[in-house]
Figure 1 (cartoon, rainbow, N blue to C red):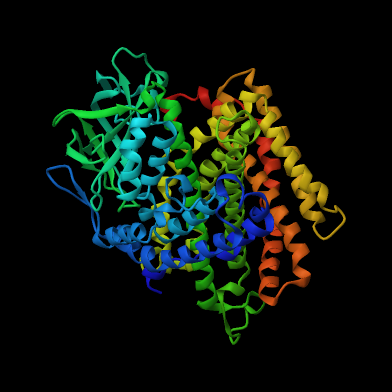
Figure 2: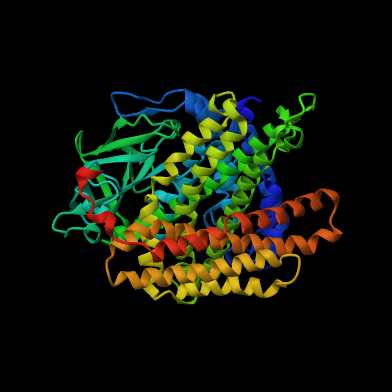
Length: 606
Protein backbone atom coordinates (compact mmCIF):
# COMPACT_ATOMS: atom_id res chain seq x y z
CA UNK A 1 0.00 0.00 0.00
CA UNK A 2 1.27 3.46 -0.87
CA UNK A 3 1.26 5.78 2.12
CA UNK A 4 -0.27 8.40 -0.18
CA UNK A 5 -3.41 6.24 0.06
CA UNK A 6 -3.11 5.72 3.81
CA UNK A 7 -6.40 7.50 4.50
CA UNK A 8 -9.32 5.32 5.57
CA UNK A 9 -12.52 6.97 6.71
CA UNK A 10 -15.56 5.57 8.47
CA UNK A 11 -18.51 7.47 7.03
CA UNK A 12 -20.84 4.63 7.98
CA UNK A 13 -20.12 5.18 11.66
CA UNK A 14 -20.31 8.97 11.30
CA UNK A 15 -23.75 8.65 9.72
CA UNK A 16 -24.78 6.13 12.40
CA UNK A 17 -23.90 8.68 15.08
CA UNK A 18 -25.58 11.59 13.32
CA UNK A 19 -28.78 10.06 12.03
CA UNK A 20 -29.48 6.91 14.06
CA UNK A 21 -28.25 7.84 17.53
CA UNK A 22 -28.22 11.63 17.76
CA UNK A 23 -31.04 11.99 15.20
CA UNK A 24 -29.75 15.39 14.15
CA UNK A 25 -32.24 15.47 11.27
CA UNK A 26 -34.94 15.87 13.92
CA UNK A 27 -33.15 17.86 16.62
CA UNK A 28 -30.67 20.16 14.83
CA UNK A 29 -30.83 20.27 11.03
CA UNK A 30 -33.32 22.67 9.52
CA UNK A 31 -33.66 24.68 12.72
CA UNK A 32 -32.59 28.25 13.55
CA UNK A 33 -29.13 29.06 12.25
CA UNK A 34 -29.05 25.64 10.57
CA UNK A 35 -32.31 26.07 8.64
CA UNK A 36 -30.52 25.83 5.30
CA UNK A 37 -29.18 22.30 5.76
CA UNK A 38 -31.27 19.13 5.78
CA UNK A 39 -30.23 15.50 6.26
CA UNK A 40 -29.83 14.82 2.53
CA UNK A 41 -27.57 17.85 2.11
CA UNK A 42 -25.51 16.92 5.17
CA UNK A 43 -24.95 13.38 3.87
CA UNK A 44 -24.07 14.54 0.38
CA UNK A 45 -21.72 17.20 1.75
CA UNK A 46 -19.79 14.73 3.91
CA UNK A 47 -19.63 12.16 1.11
CA UNK A 48 -18.22 14.77 -1.27
CA UNK A 49 -15.76 16.05 1.31
CA UNK A 50 -14.60 12.51 2.03
CA UNK A 51 -13.81 12.07 -1.67
CA UNK A 52 -12.00 15.42 -1.70
CA UNK A 53 -9.88 14.45 1.31
CA UNK A 54 -8.86 11.19 -0.35
CA UNK A 55 -8.08 12.90 -3.66
CA UNK A 56 -6.48 16.18 -2.55
CA UNK A 57 -5.37 16.04 1.10
CA UNK A 58 -4.14 12.49 1.71
CA UNK A 59 -1.58 12.49 -1.16
CA UNK A 60 0.40 15.37 0.42
CA UNK A 61 0.52 13.75 3.86
CA UNK A 62 3.87 12.02 3.35
CA UNK A 63 5.43 15.08 1.68
CA UNK A 64 4.32 17.17 4.67
CA UNK A 65 6.52 14.94 6.80
CA UNK A 66 9.49 14.33 4.47
CA UNK A 67 10.09 17.73 2.81
CA UNK A 68 11.58 20.20 5.30
CA UNK A 69 10.20 23.64 5.95
CA UNK A 70 12.50 26.55 5.14
CA UNK A 71 12.86 29.98 6.74
CA UNK A 72 14.39 32.86 4.79
CA UNK A 73 16.15 35.98 6.08
CA UNK A 74 12.94 38.00 5.81
CA UNK A 75 11.08 35.70 8.20
CA UNK A 76 9.05 33.88 5.56
CA UNK A 77 8.35 30.16 5.94
CA UNK A 78 7.99 27.98 2.85
CA UNK A 79 5.94 24.79 3.19
CA UNK A 80 6.22 21.73 0.89
CA UNK A 81 4.76 22.35 -2.56
CA UNK A 82 2.38 19.32 -2.41
CA UNK A 83 0.95 20.65 0.86
CA UNK A 84 0.55 24.11 -0.64
CA UNK A 85 -1.40 22.59 -3.55
CA UNK A 86 -3.67 20.74 -1.12
CA UNK A 87 -4.47 23.94 0.77
CA UNK A 88 -5.13 25.80 -2.47
CA UNK A 89 -7.48 23.05 -3.64
CA UNK A 90 -9.33 23.23 -0.33
CA UNK A 91 -10.00 26.93 -0.82
CA UNK A 92 -10.62 26.74 -4.57
CA UNK A 93 -13.32 24.14 -3.95
CA UNK A 94 -14.79 26.40 -1.25
CA UNK A 95 -14.55 23.81 1.49
CA UNK A 96 -13.43 26.56 3.87
CA UNK A 97 -17.06 27.75 3.84
CA UNK A 98 -18.34 24.50 5.36
CA UNK A 99 -18.19 25.55 9.00
CA UNK A 100 -19.27 29.15 8.49
CA UNK A 101 -22.80 30.52 9.01
CA UNK A 102 -24.84 31.62 6.03
CA UNK A 103 -24.72 35.27 7.14
CA UNK A 104 -21.04 35.43 6.13
CA UNK A 105 -21.39 33.32 3.00
CA UNK A 106 -20.95 29.89 4.57
CA UNK A 107 -23.00 26.71 4.20
CA UNK A 108 -24.70 27.03 7.58
CA UNK A 109 -23.58 23.58 8.67
CA UNK A 110 -24.04 22.78 12.36
CA UNK A 111 -21.16 21.73 14.57
CA UNK A 112 -21.97 18.02 14.20
CA UNK A 113 -21.39 18.27 10.46
CA UNK A 114 -18.42 20.63 10.72
CA UNK A 115 -16.62 18.43 13.25
CA UNK A 116 -17.42 15.35 11.17
CA UNK A 117 -15.74 17.02 8.22
CA UNK A 118 -12.79 17.99 10.43
CA UNK A 119 -12.38 14.34 11.38
CA UNK A 120 -12.09 13.46 7.69
CA UNK A 121 -9.49 16.14 6.97
CA UNK A 122 -7.49 15.37 10.11
CA UNK A 123 -7.38 11.66 9.25
CA UNK A 124 -6.32 12.42 5.67
CA UNK A 125 -3.69 15.04 6.53
CA UNK A 126 -3.64 16.58 9.99
CA UNK A 127 -0.97 19.07 8.94
CA UNK A 128 -3.21 20.46 6.22
CA UNK A 129 -6.22 20.53 8.54
CA UNK A 130 -4.37 22.71 11.03
CA UNK A 131 -3.53 25.31 8.38
CA UNK A 132 -7.26 25.92 7.97
CA UNK A 133 -7.59 28.12 11.07
CA UNK A 134 -8.35 31.31 9.16
CA UNK A 135 -12.12 30.88 9.13
CA UNK A 136 -12.14 30.11 12.86
CA UNK A 137 -10.25 33.33 13.67
CA UNK A 138 -12.57 35.21 11.29
CA UNK A 139 -15.56 33.99 13.31
CA UNK A 140 -13.89 35.07 16.56
CA UNK A 141 -13.38 38.55 15.13
CA UNK A 142 -17.02 38.53 14.01
CA UNK A 143 -18.14 37.57 17.52
CA UNK A 144 -15.81 39.82 19.52
CA UNK A 145 -14.50 42.60 17.27
CA UNK A 146 -15.73 46.15 16.93
CA UNK A 147 -17.84 46.97 13.90
CA UNK A 148 -14.83 48.62 12.28
CA UNK A 149 -12.69 45.53 12.93
CA UNK A 150 -15.33 43.28 11.42
CA UNK A 151 -15.53 45.42 8.25
CA UNK A 152 -11.76 45.48 8.02
CA UNK A 153 -10.97 41.78 8.44
CA UNK A 154 -13.95 39.48 7.99
CA UNK A 155 -14.45 39.46 4.21
CA UNK A 156 -10.75 39.41 3.24
CA UNK A 157 -10.02 36.56 5.65
CA UNK A 158 -12.83 34.43 4.24
CA UNK A 159 -12.70 35.40 0.57
CA UNK A 160 -8.92 35.60 0.12
CA UNK A 161 -7.92 32.57 2.19
CA UNK A 162 -5.85 34.42 4.77
CA UNK A 163 -4.02 32.33 7.32
CA UNK A 164 -4.28 32.79 11.07
CA UNK A 165 -2.64 31.81 14.33
CA UNK A 166 -3.33 31.98 18.06
CA UNK A 167 -0.36 33.48 19.93
CA UNK A 168 -0.08 32.75 23.66
CA UNK A 169 3.08 30.89 24.65
CA UNK A 170 6.35 32.60 25.58
CA UNK A 171 9.80 31.01 26.05
CA UNK A 172 9.93 31.49 29.82
CA UNK A 173 6.23 31.06 30.53
CA UNK A 174 5.15 27.88 28.74
CA UNK A 175 1.75 26.75 29.98
CA UNK A 176 1.78 29.51 32.60
CA UNK A 177 0.16 32.00 30.23
CA UNK A 178 -0.26 34.58 32.96
CA UNK A 179 3.53 34.86 33.27
CA UNK A 180 3.75 36.31 29.76
CA UNK A 181 5.87 39.44 29.36
CA UNK A 182 5.00 40.59 25.84
CA UNK A 183 4.07 44.27 26.12
CA UNK A 184 1.50 46.44 24.40
CA UNK A 185 1.86 50.23 24.20
CA UNK A 186 -1.19 52.27 23.28
CA UNK A 187 -0.70 54.54 20.27
CA UNK A 188 -4.23 55.82 19.71
CA UNK A 189 -7.67 54.42 20.47
CA UNK A 190 -7.61 50.66 19.81
CA UNK A 191 -4.21 50.88 18.03
CA UNK A 192 -1.26 49.46 19.98
CA UNK A 193 2.35 48.50 19.34
CA UNK A 194 3.40 45.02 20.52
CA UNK A 195 6.88 44.08 21.76
CA UNK A 196 8.07 40.64 22.81
CA UNK A 197 8.80 37.07 21.75
CA UNK A 198 6.33 34.22 21.47
CA UNK A 199 7.22 30.54 21.01
CA UNK A 200 5.61 27.32 19.77
CA UNK A 201 3.13 29.21 17.57
CA UNK A 202 1.39 26.74 15.29
CA UNK A 203 1.47 27.94 11.68
CA UNK A 204 2.84 31.31 12.76
CA UNK A 205 4.09 31.84 9.22
CA UNK A 206 3.67 30.01 5.90
CA UNK A 207 3.51 30.77 2.22
CA UNK A 208 0.62 30.24 -0.15
CA UNK A 209 -1.46 32.96 1.49
CA UNK A 210 -1.13 36.73 1.07
CA UNK A 211 -1.60 37.49 4.77
CA UNK A 212 -1.67 35.92 8.22
CA UNK A 213 -3.76 37.30 11.07
CA UNK A 214 -2.33 36.69 14.54
CA UNK A 215 -4.48 36.88 17.66
CA UNK A 216 -1.93 37.88 20.29
CA UNK A 217 -2.07 38.00 24.07
CA UNK A 218 0.01 40.88 25.45
CA UNK A 219 0.11 42.99 28.60
CA UNK A 220 -0.74 46.68 28.11
CA UNK A 221 1.44 49.12 30.00
CA UNK A 222 0.14 49.68 33.50
CA UNK A 223 -1.90 46.47 33.63
CA UNK A 224 -1.44 44.04 36.49
CA UNK A 225 0.15 40.59 36.62
CA UNK A 226 -1.38 37.23 35.78
CA UNK A 227 -3.92 36.35 33.12
CA UNK A 228 -6.28 39.17 34.18
CA UNK A 229 -3.73 41.72 33.02
CA UNK A 230 -3.61 40.36 29.47
CA UNK A 231 -5.43 41.77 26.46
CA UNK A 232 -5.93 40.32 22.98
CA UNK A 233 -4.82 42.05 19.80
CA UNK A 234 -5.29 41.52 16.07
CA UNK A 235 -1.76 41.68 14.63
CA UNK A 236 -1.54 41.06 10.85
CA UNK A 237 1.64 40.04 9.02
CA UNK A 238 0.83 42.74 6.48
CA UNK A 239 -1.07 45.74 7.77
CA UNK A 240 -4.72 45.82 6.74
CA UNK A 241 -6.13 49.17 5.76
CA UNK A 242 -9.60 50.22 6.86
CA UNK A 243 -11.08 49.16 3.51
CA UNK A 244 -9.58 45.66 3.85
CA UNK A 245 -6.75 46.23 1.37
CA UNK A 246 -3.17 45.24 2.19
CA UNK A 247 -0.68 47.77 3.48
CA UNK A 248 3.01 47.57 4.41
CA UNK A 249 4.78 44.68 6.13
CA UNK A 250 4.02 44.78 9.85
CA UNK A 251 6.71 44.34 12.50
CA UNK A 252 5.99 40.69 13.38
CA UNK A 253 8.50 38.19 12.02
CA UNK A 254 9.14 34.48 12.31
CA UNK A 255 12.65 34.25 13.77
CA UNK A 256 12.91 30.46 14.16
CA UNK A 257 11.04 27.28 13.27
CA UNK A 258 11.09 24.26 15.56
CA UNK A 259 12.39 20.90 14.32
CA UNK A 260 9.89 18.41 15.68
CA UNK A 261 9.44 14.65 15.98
CA UNK A 262 6.16 14.79 14.07
CA UNK A 263 3.60 17.02 12.39
CA UNK A 264 6.68 18.43 10.70
CA UNK A 265 4.90 20.28 7.92
CA UNK A 266 3.00 22.38 10.44
CA UNK A 267 5.29 25.35 10.99
CA UNK A 268 5.83 25.81 14.71
CA UNK A 269 7.31 29.29 14.94
CA UNK A 270 9.06 31.69 17.20
CA UNK A 271 7.48 35.08 16.52
CA UNK A 272 9.28 38.28 17.41
CA UNK A 273 7.28 41.50 17.70
CA UNK A 274 8.70 45.00 17.36
CA UNK A 275 12.35 44.13 16.72
CA UNK A 276 12.42 44.99 12.99
CA UNK A 277 9.95 47.84 13.19
CA UNK A 278 6.69 48.58 15.00
CA UNK A 279 4.33 45.61 15.31
CA UNK A 280 0.95 47.27 15.16
CA UNK A 281 -2.14 45.59 16.55
CA UNK A 282 -5.77 46.40 17.25
CA UNK A 283 -7.34 45.75 20.66
CA UNK A 284 -10.06 43.17 20.03
CA UNK A 285 -13.47 44.68 20.64
CA UNK A 286 -11.83 47.75 22.15
CA UNK A 287 -11.92 46.04 25.56
CA UNK A 288 -9.27 44.56 27.86
CA UNK A 289 -10.67 41.05 28.27
CA UNK A 290 -7.87 39.08 26.65
CA UNK A 291 -7.98 35.71 28.40
CA UNK A 292 -11.78 35.49 28.19
CA UNK A 293 -11.62 36.37 24.50
CA UNK A 294 -8.79 33.95 23.76
CA UNK A 295 -10.76 31.10 25.31
CA UNK A 296 -13.10 31.33 22.31
CA UNK A 297 -10.11 30.13 20.27
CA UNK A 298 -8.66 27.82 22.93
CA UNK A 299 -11.91 25.88 23.33
CA UNK A 300 -12.19 25.40 19.58
CA UNK A 301 -8.54 24.27 19.48
CA UNK A 302 -9.08 21.79 22.32
CA UNK A 303 -12.03 20.27 20.50
CA UNK A 304 -9.93 20.10 17.34
CA UNK A 305 -7.07 18.34 19.13
CA UNK A 306 -9.37 15.68 20.58
CA UNK A 307 -11.07 15.13 17.23
CA UNK A 308 -7.68 14.91 15.50
CA UNK A 309 -6.56 12.20 17.93
CA UNK A 310 -9.79 10.25 17.44
CA UNK A 311 -9.46 10.58 13.65
CA UNK A 312 -5.87 9.31 13.76
CA UNK A 313 -6.87 6.29 15.82
CA UNK A 314 -9.73 5.51 13.47
CA UNK A 315 -7.63 5.49 10.30
CA UNK A 316 -4.80 3.69 12.12
CA UNK A 317 -7.19 0.96 13.25
CA UNK A 318 -8.67 0.53 9.78
CA UNK A 319 -5.18 0.27 8.27
CA UNK A 320 -4.15 -2.29 10.91
CA UNK A 321 -7.37 -4.23 10.33
CA UNK A 322 -6.61 -4.42 6.60
CA UNK A 323 -3.08 -5.67 7.31
CA UNK A 324 -4.27 -8.41 9.69
CA UNK A 325 -6.70 -9.71 7.10
CA UNK A 326 -3.87 -10.10 4.58
CA UNK A 327 -0.80 -11.05 6.60
CA UNK A 328 -0.38 -14.83 6.95
CA UNK A 329 1.76 -16.06 9.81
CA UNK A 330 1.66 -19.04 12.15
CA UNK A 331 -0.87 -21.78 12.67
CA UNK A 332 -4.14 -21.47 14.50
CA UNK A 333 -3.43 -21.56 18.24
CA UNK A 334 -5.55 -24.70 18.63
CA UNK A 335 -3.17 -26.49 16.21
CA UNK A 336 0.04 -24.80 17.32
CA UNK A 337 1.82 -28.12 17.96
CA UNK A 338 0.87 -29.52 14.55
CA UNK A 339 3.79 -28.70 12.24
CA UNK A 340 1.69 -29.60 9.22
CA UNK A 341 -1.14 -27.22 10.14
CA UNK A 342 -1.84 -24.54 7.52
CA UNK A 343 -0.64 -21.00 8.19
CA UNK A 344 -3.48 -18.56 8.94
CA UNK A 345 -4.11 -14.84 8.59
CA UNK A 346 -3.14 -13.13 11.79
CA UNK A 347 -6.67 -11.82 12.38
CA UNK A 348 -7.45 -15.40 13.41
CA UNK A 349 -5.05 -15.19 16.38
CA UNK A 350 -6.79 -14.34 19.68
CA UNK A 351 -4.32 -11.65 20.77
CA UNK A 352 -4.58 -9.87 17.43
CA UNK A 353 -8.36 -9.91 17.73
CA UNK A 354 -8.04 -8.46 21.22
CA UNK A 355 -5.86 -5.63 19.94
CA UNK A 356 -8.22 -4.92 17.05
CA UNK A 357 -11.33 -4.81 19.22
CA UNK A 358 -9.55 -2.60 21.73
CA UNK A 359 -8.85 -0.10 18.95
CA UNK A 360 -12.32 -0.41 17.43
CA UNK A 361 -14.20 0.10 20.69
CA UNK A 362 -12.17 3.19 21.57
CA UNK A 363 -12.14 4.70 18.07
CA UNK A 364 -15.92 4.40 17.84
CA UNK A 365 -16.41 5.39 21.47
CA UNK A 366 -14.30 8.51 21.05
CA UNK A 367 -16.15 9.41 17.85
CA UNK A 368 -19.38 9.10 19.84
CA UNK A 369 -17.91 11.40 22.52
CA UNK A 370 -16.76 14.02 19.99
CA UNK A 371 -20.03 14.07 18.05
CA UNK A 372 -22.15 14.04 21.21
CA UNK A 373 -20.17 17.07 22.41
CA UNK A 374 -20.68 18.73 19.01
CA UNK A 375 -24.43 18.13 19.29
CA UNK A 376 -24.43 19.89 22.67
CA UNK A 377 -22.64 22.83 21.01
CA UNK A 378 -25.41 22.95 18.42
CA UNK A 379 -28.04 22.89 21.14
CA UNK A 380 -26.24 25.84 22.74
CA UNK A 381 -26.45 27.73 19.45
CA UNK A 382 -30.15 26.95 19.04
CA UNK A 383 -30.79 28.07 22.63
CA UNK A 384 -29.37 31.52 21.97
CA UNK A 385 -25.64 30.98 21.89
CA UNK A 386 -22.68 30.89 24.24
CA UNK A 387 -23.35 32.99 27.33
CA UNK A 388 -27.12 33.16 26.84
CA UNK A 389 -29.06 32.42 30.03
CA UNK A 390 -31.35 29.98 28.22
CA UNK A 391 -28.31 27.98 27.11
CA UNK A 392 -26.65 27.97 30.53
CA UNK A 393 -27.04 24.28 31.41
CA UNK A 394 -26.00 23.15 27.94
CA UNK A 395 -23.10 25.60 27.96
CA UNK A 396 -21.81 24.12 31.21
CA UNK A 397 -22.22 20.58 29.88
CA UNK A 398 -20.13 21.45 26.83
CA UNK A 399 -17.49 22.95 29.13
CA UNK A 400 -17.45 19.74 31.17
CA UNK A 401 -17.06 17.52 28.12
CA UNK A 402 -14.18 19.45 26.52
CA UNK A 403 -11.46 18.17 28.90
CA UNK A 404 -12.64 14.64 28.16
CA UNK A 405 -12.47 15.22 24.41
CA UNK A 406 -9.07 16.90 24.51
CA UNK A 407 -7.33 15.44 27.54
CA UNK A 408 -8.52 11.85 27.47
CA UNK A 409 -8.67 11.26 23.72
CA UNK A 410 -5.20 12.67 23.11
CA UNK A 411 -3.62 10.65 25.95
CA UNK A 412 -5.41 7.36 25.30
CA UNK A 413 -4.92 7.48 21.54
CA UNK A 414 -1.14 7.71 21.92
CA UNK A 415 -1.26 4.50 23.95
CA UNK A 416 -3.59 2.80 21.46
CA UNK A 417 -1.48 3.74 18.44
CA UNK A 418 1.27 1.59 19.94
CA UNK A 419 -1.25 -1.25 19.97
CA UNK A 420 -2.05 -0.50 16.36
CA UNK A 421 1.64 -0.71 15.45
CA UNK A 422 1.89 -4.03 17.30
CA UNK A 423 -0.60 -5.52 14.86
CA UNK A 424 1.99 -5.11 12.11
CA UNK A 425 4.89 -6.62 13.99
CA UNK A 426 8.21 -5.30 12.69
CA UNK A 427 6.57 -3.97 9.54
CA UNK A 428 4.87 -1.27 11.56
CA UNK A 429 8.17 0.19 12.70
CA UNK A 430 9.26 1.19 9.21
CA UNK A 431 7.92 3.79 6.81
CA UNK A 432 6.41 1.20 4.46
CA UNK A 433 3.22 1.58 6.52
CA UNK A 434 1.65 4.77 7.89
CA UNK A 435 1.50 3.88 11.58
CA UNK A 436 4.94 5.22 12.54
CA UNK A 437 4.03 8.66 11.16
CA UNK A 438 0.62 8.51 12.81
CA UNK A 439 2.37 8.05 16.16
CA UNK A 440 4.81 10.91 15.59
CA UNK A 441 2.11 13.24 14.25
CA UNK A 442 -0.28 12.47 17.10
CA UNK A 443 2.00 12.76 20.13
CA UNK A 444 1.80 16.56 20.10
CA UNK A 445 -1.91 16.29 20.92
CA UNK A 446 -1.18 15.48 24.57
CA UNK A 447 1.02 18.57 24.86
CA UNK A 448 -0.52 21.60 23.23
CA UNK A 449 -3.67 23.53 24.12
CA UNK A 450 -3.02 22.48 27.70
CA UNK A 451 -1.22 19.28 28.69
CA UNK A 452 -3.22 16.31 29.94
CA UNK A 453 -2.84 17.24 33.58
CA UNK A 454 -3.93 20.81 32.88
CA UNK A 455 -7.09 19.28 31.39
CA UNK A 456 -7.50 17.16 34.52
CA UNK A 457 -7.21 20.17 36.84
CA UNK A 458 -9.59 22.11 34.58
CA UNK A 459 -12.12 19.29 34.83
CA UNK A 460 -11.94 18.94 38.59
CA UNK A 461 -11.71 22.56 39.73
CA UNK A 462 -13.37 24.61 36.98
CA UNK A 463 -15.92 22.22 35.53
CA UNK A 464 -16.98 20.09 38.53
CA UNK A 465 -16.18 21.94 41.75
CA UNK A 466 -17.18 25.35 40.39
CA UNK A 467 -20.90 24.54 40.40
CA UNK A 468 -20.81 22.04 43.26
CA UNK A 469 -20.98 19.07 40.89
CA UNK A 470 -24.38 20.07 39.47
CA UNK A 471 -23.37 19.68 35.82
CA UNK A 472 -21.62 16.38 36.53
CA UNK A 473 -24.72 15.04 38.26
CA UNK A 474 -26.82 16.11 35.28
CA UNK A 475 -24.48 14.14 33.00
CA UNK A 476 -24.81 11.14 35.30
CA UNK A 477 -28.58 11.56 35.00
CA UNK A 478 -28.37 11.24 31.22
CA UNK A 479 -26.46 7.99 31.62
CA UNK A 480 -29.02 6.73 34.15
CA UNK A 481 -31.78 7.46 31.64
CA UNK A 482 -30.10 5.14 29.13
CA UNK A 483 -29.71 2.46 31.78
CA UNK A 484 -33.44 2.74 32.48
CA UNK A 485 -34.11 1.81 28.82
CA UNK A 486 -32.10 -1.43 29.08
CA UNK A 487 -33.53 -4.61 30.59
CA UNK A 488 -31.02 -5.80 33.21
CA UNK A 489 -32.08 -9.38 32.46
CA UNK A 490 -32.00 -8.95 28.68
CA UNK A 491 -29.32 -9.37 26.00
CA UNK A 492 -27.48 -6.25 27.20
CA UNK A 493 -27.73 -7.19 30.87
CA UNK A 494 -24.00 -7.67 31.41
CA UNK A 495 -23.31 -4.29 29.84
CA UNK A 496 -26.05 -2.71 31.97
CA UNK A 497 -24.46 -4.14 35.13
CA UNK A 498 -20.95 -3.03 34.10
CA UNK A 499 -21.99 0.55 33.38
CA UNK A 500 -24.11 0.71 36.56
CA UNK A 501 -21.15 -0.44 38.64
CA UNK A 502 -18.74 1.93 36.90
CA UNK A 503 -21.11 4.86 37.31
CA UNK A 504 -21.44 4.15 41.04
CA UNK A 505 -17.68 3.82 41.41
CA UNK A 506 -17.09 7.07 39.53
CA UNK A 507 -19.43 8.85 41.93
CA UNK A 508 -17.51 7.23 44.78
CA UNK A 509 -14.23 8.36 43.24
CA UNK A 510 -15.38 11.99 43.21
CA UNK A 511 -16.61 11.60 46.77
CA UNK A 512 -13.23 10.28 47.87
CA UNK A 513 -11.42 13.17 46.19
CA UNK A 514 -13.67 15.77 47.81
CA UNK A 515 -12.99 14.19 51.20
CA UNK A 516 -9.24 14.31 50.61
CA UNK A 517 -9.33 17.97 49.63
CA UNK A 518 -9.58 18.79 53.33
CA UNK A 519 -6.14 17.28 53.81
CA UNK A 520 -4.30 18.77 50.82
CA UNK A 521 -4.74 19.96 47.23
CA UNK A 522 -1.83 17.70 46.42
CA UNK A 523 -4.29 14.80 46.33
CA UNK A 524 -5.89 16.30 43.23
CA UNK A 525 -2.46 16.83 41.76
CA UNK A 526 -1.58 13.19 42.30
CA UNK A 527 -4.95 11.71 41.30
CA UNK A 528 -6.30 14.26 38.81
CA UNK A 529 -5.42 12.31 35.67
CA UNK A 530 -7.01 9.20 37.15
CA UNK A 531 -10.22 11.17 37.75
CA UNK A 532 -10.16 12.51 34.17
CA UNK A 533 -9.59 9.07 32.66
CA UNK A 534 -12.26 7.37 34.76
CA UNK A 535 -14.80 10.07 33.92
CA UNK A 536 -14.11 9.78 30.21
CA UNK A 537 -14.26 5.98 30.26
CA UNK A 538 -17.64 5.99 31.97
CA UNK A 539 -19.03 8.57 29.54
CA UNK A 540 -17.72 6.58 26.57
CA UNK A 541 -19.18 3.40 28.08
CA UNK A 542 -22.54 5.11 28.36
CA UNK A 543 -22.42 6.33 24.75
CA UNK A 544 -21.44 2.86 23.51
CA UNK A 545 -24.34 1.31 25.42
CA UNK A 546 -26.67 3.89 23.91
CA UNK A 547 -25.38 2.92 20.47
CA UNK A 548 -25.90 -0.76 21.30
CA UNK A 549 -29.55 -0.10 22.14
CA UNK A 550 -30.04 1.47 18.71
CA UNK A 551 -28.08 -1.28 16.95
CA UNK A 552 -29.99 -4.08 18.66
CA UNK A 553 -33.31 -2.54 17.66
CA UNK A 554 -32.25 -1.97 14.04
CA UNK A 555 -30.52 -5.30 13.40
CA UNK A 556 -33.50 -7.64 12.83
CA UNK A 557 -34.72 -5.76 9.74
CA UNK A 558 -31.33 -4.59 8.45
CA UNK A 559 -29.54 -5.58 5.24
CA UNK A 560 -26.70 -8.06 5.45
CA UNK A 561 -24.08 -5.30 5.35
CA UNK A 562 -25.87 -3.34 8.03
CA UNK A 563 -26.26 -6.45 10.18
CA UNK A 564 -22.48 -6.84 10.12
CA UNK A 565 -22.14 -3.20 11.14
CA UNK A 566 -24.62 -3.57 14.01
CA UNK A 567 -22.95 -6.80 15.13
CA UNK A 568 -19.74 -4.80 15.34
CA UNK A 569 -21.48 -2.25 17.55
CA UNK A 570 -22.70 -4.96 19.91
CA UNK A 571 -19.28 -6.63 19.98
CA UNK A 572 -17.61 -3.31 20.81
CA UNK A 573 -19.83 -2.53 23.79
CA UNK A 574 -19.48 -6.08 25.13
CA UNK A 575 -15.70 -5.93 24.90
CA UNK A 576 -15.58 -2.46 26.45
CA UNK A 577 -17.90 -3.42 29.31
CA UNK A 578 -15.79 -6.44 30.21
CA UNK A 579 -12.31 -5.03 29.62
CA UNK A 580 -12.43 -1.28 30.28
CA UNK A 581 -15.23 -0.38 32.68
CA UNK A 582 -13.94 -2.62 35.52
CA UNK A 583 -10.91 -0.33 35.62
CA UNK A 584 -13.10 2.41 37.12
CA UNK A 585 -13.49 0.26 40.23
CA UNK A 586 -9.73 0.04 40.52
CA UNK A 587 -9.40 3.81 39.98
CA UNK A 588 -11.75 4.44 42.89
CA UNK A 589 -9.81 2.10 45.19
CA UNK A 590 -6.49 3.65 44.26
CA UNK A 591 -7.80 7.15 44.90
CA UNK A 592 -9.31 6.13 48.24
CA UNK A 593 -5.99 4.62 49.32
CA UNK A 594 -3.81 7.47 48.05
CA UNK A 595 -1.32 9.14 50.37
CA UNK A 596 0.98 12.13 50.15
CA UNK A 597 4.16 10.11 50.71
CA UNK A 598 5.42 10.87 47.22
CA UNK A 599 5.59 14.58 48.02
CA UNK A 600 7.96 13.84 50.90
CA UNK A 601 10.49 11.88 48.86
CA UNK A 602 13.76 13.86 48.71
CA UNK A 603 14.71 15.04 45.25
CA UNK A 604 18.01 13.21 45.55
CA UNK A 605 16.10 9.93 45.85
CA UNK A 606 14.55 10.23 42.39
